[in-house]
Image (tube, rainbow over all chains, first blue to last red; front, side):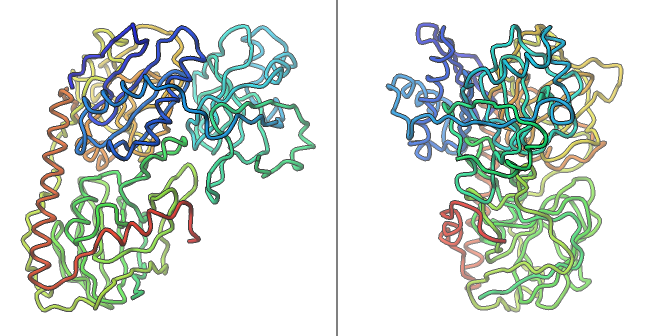
Length: 240
Length: 347
């Protein structure tokens, strides 16, 4: 239970303490798809067994998994041992196969105030940025903040996109943003530091329904440009 | 038996619990009482389950009238608590007499006060919790004239013993004096800060005005003191961040994520505030000075377990006291009915 990071290169993962109530598993596999598979497989297995080991939260992302637990009811050693056992398991078949969603987006202007800046950074025209963003389906890797935003692989831009130096105090729900090698669709209004290139009129999460969202990690998103005049056609529509 | 309290002075008050466990799986905040210790003790003092709904008052005066005698307990920051103009103690159960106004005024030193009831406060649930989620827009603040239904599931409590301050149950009040010591453990990415990580402990910090249940912003009390700096600029993929994560996004301030934090971030985690110190920070007002202290993970776990054990012992003293007065104890089944509801009920 020391704070020392446990490195076992032969197993291609690192388990680190994250305070008194969480540990972080990071996959070091050479392949990004394998890293994602590894942490989501452990997350699914914890989901099935979590209550037995006092797990209170499971956050799998691209290559990492945060496991939150009640340190009054279990120990770091027990959680670490549990995770190390689960990582050896073969991947379970997903509850459902991946689905593809078409996401209509109004790019630029008030809908995507950072489009021009992103284009400038990438040394592309805004039209080329839009084309690359919708050139092919992007895979959803996890739910993230704010409010259960689908987090995706980034488009095939020539280089990573820097975060804004000054975060925007208000980013609306449906904002379509990119940063680093990632892409996201904001689920709820919140401050945000990611450059916003467009906005979808679709409803991404709905607190009045169960589940809150139709999307699952592994699904793919195909972004389709629409005009501002078409916004109302899709406004408030929930996908799925 | 459906009874209620009717709000006369709403202040900034919401129905709260210990948080939405496992909601982080779907990208949602955990939320829940910012001072988990005081909330846990409040429910223990009235013999309600740990996860039972209770009221969280933030900074502002509160008042309400009860339709029936209620056994209640008030914990958290110091304040003037009165029923019908007569002062009542904090950190001990007392009776809120039917028809009388209970007021909580002049919340000081800390920020939040908790009011727990022997009975079940009615609240809408989402994913097994009534905790407000400011990002999802779930839950809300009470308004003047609003009635909150309370199921007292038993005969009204009208025991002569409750008319006087009888109980001495020995709940340990949270401390609120001087410069607070906030315990942290090394974060998983502390090595990315090199020797600058020690700056977290070199100087006191002051809580900034733009702090809330999502996170607290702090700056060194001496504006000339440098904050820790990451020694590299490589991109970090978004990943799960723990409640209590200490980050240094930019500029001269540090950020401590609290219970309403977004579950993912692309910043390295310098340190993590301990579970017990998170309850302290849940009480920190803008302007409060704090000093960080590094502890080991095992010391942090020991401190948390000691705190939980003290609440367990308090629960058994409450159970004994209630048994001798023939007050029915609420069973866990009351709250289990709620937690089995998978989605939001109509408010």
